[in-house]
Amino acid sequence: MVVRDLLTRGLLAGLLAGLLALGVAEVLGEPQVSRAIAVESQLFKQEHKAPTPVVVSRDVQSTAGLATGLLVIGTAFGGLVALAFAFAYGRIGRVGPKGTSLAVAAAGFVAIYLIPFLKYPANPPSIGQATTIDHRTEIYFGLMLISILTTIGAVILGRRLTTRFGAWNATLIAAGAFVAVIAVVFVVMPGLNEVPAGFPATTLWRFRLGSLATQLALWTAIGLILGPLTERSAGYRRHQALAASR
Amino acid sequence: MSDAVAIPVAQPVPIAIPIREILPWAIFLALIALQMIYFIGAEQGAASVISGTFVHEFVHDARHLLGFPCH
Image (cartoon, rainbow over all chains, first blue to last red; front, side, top):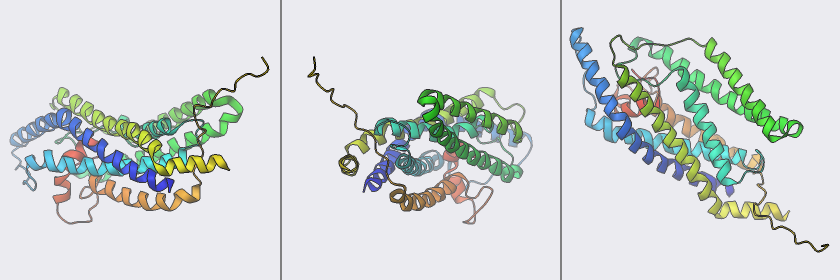
């Protein structure tokens, strides 16, 4: 029952977080997407290339399309955070539901977005060649997988070391090991730069900040909403009461 | 001095949820969530389940802003 309650609350938290991320993306991201597309059509004109055919209009892409994408991803991430919460709760020290929820969401943000972003940052339209999409997809999701596994490994390492070194030192050692592994992975994995000459640096920088803000809003909201919702749920209370009476 | 009052415990000790209780939910939801992430993040990019470019173009802005590789 407690897992069911967690999941429903995770999905709800994800949906609400998706709405917040949508607001952030509209305000900080969309203006940069529009600017990038304007640059792209100008570059196409200079190179005498035909503009790409319109399948979905810009109006739909920047409203219904963006909303669909963010709400679906938000709900999926919310569900995944709830599941990770179910595994982490009571296993990462004396941390209650609010702290566990925030810690799990923070780990999710770092593992799923921040680490891949630091090596292969988000790009606006007009950056990225169609011929390299296979390669770019492979290395992006490959790095994401490595980053998720390294994060899980670091958490397990921290837990194992806690009895010998205490919670503080064990956490520091695990975090240090995580940074060291990721640093080596960053050096080993291929670099990527497909920014065309003359692409405005400010637009690129603002787009990347907008992307970072969107994902940060999404994960922070999930982390802050899931904890209090879980604490109030009947399933969670029954779980705590039942386990305490044993 | 001997009858010192016990300090009430403010924080209940968090008790882990048994793995076997989590596992079926975890497997099911992880599969569904991965599919959703695939459709928003990668469909009609490097790989394509549905022919055409509609899915890609529809979620285009979200894909870019979420940081997934696009185009």
